[in-house]
Amino acid sequence: MSKIKRICVYCGSGSGNSPAYTAAARQFGEILARNGIRLIYGCGSTGLMGTIAHAVHDHGGEITGIIPEFLRSQERLFGDADEVIVTADMHERKWLMFEHADAFVALPGGIGTVEELVEQLTWAQLGRHKKPILVANIAGYWDPMITMFEHLRETGFLPNGRRLAYLVADTVEAILPALNAAVAQIDERELEGETERVQRM
Image: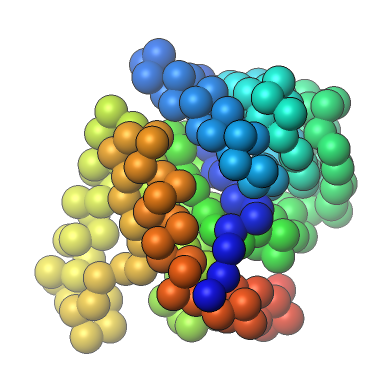
């Protein structure tokens, strides 16, 4: 049985056009802090990234921010992170975010968030890890993506017609219980994942 200690959150460097997105990021940051779960994220201080980081920090939680050198000024690095890791490029950033996390949550975000989510789903589908991946479908934000995933299955582009290995939570309150239930079925070794193979992908 495993226990979640660190969650990687993918989310937008912008805030989107619904107050529900910002409220969700703030609420989830508080939940992480109050449960002693370290936030692993992209180290930005703007948009939903900044909102969740400030919420974790303001409630006494711990933060690891991982950012490539070229984005330090563009995304305005969050200066109150407990640990800041500066990488050479995006590939190293994504691998280190994977290595540091026990689970992954996708809040609303742009194309970068979509890319990070899909990459984790791909690694899981290829058997590189069993870490839980959760889509936080705040105000139905991810509905089109979920429909697309079903379309892949229905049209025969998933192996043996299987569903992709991800969880969905429609509310912030449901995120952590869903992840805890999933990770309880995974032993510690499987939770670590095959980091060397993931790094080479």
